[in-house]
Image (cartoon, rainbow, N blue to C red; front, top):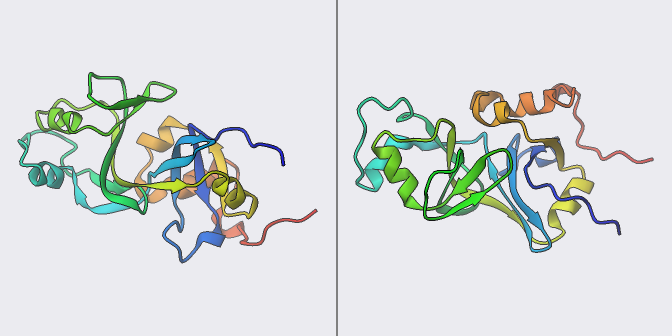
Length: 188
């Protein structure tokens, strides 16, 4: 079987076959996709908590004038829901950051959150709790089963598009309108 190219730094867009599942109408940024498996962060499911709640949870300062205090923390996926990930533009000097293409980074250390509590946040960022993970070959199988579409990375989709519109906008980049989607896989 032919090896699919890596999906790192692309988005997965949920198809109707995932309706009534945890992944219904999700868009996922793929952080890692290699022989060890795949890992991504859902970028369009709001958690019930916001950034200020995180500061309070960790007994951090709450900056009075930060515009991001009420930004929703996202449900990054169903795995390890207590683990935090910050996807952001720009490097910074953080204890644990993974560099990604297009000046993106994923930081998992608390020092970035601490800096944000002092009103020193990256210009663009998303805070996620949990992640989506697949064992080796599992994501390829799910794509072949018509569970996901893939689209190239798009910074505007990641940081500028309102959460509630990200799935429709992602489909729109492919020229697809949600009402025309089918859960049936195509056969030649």
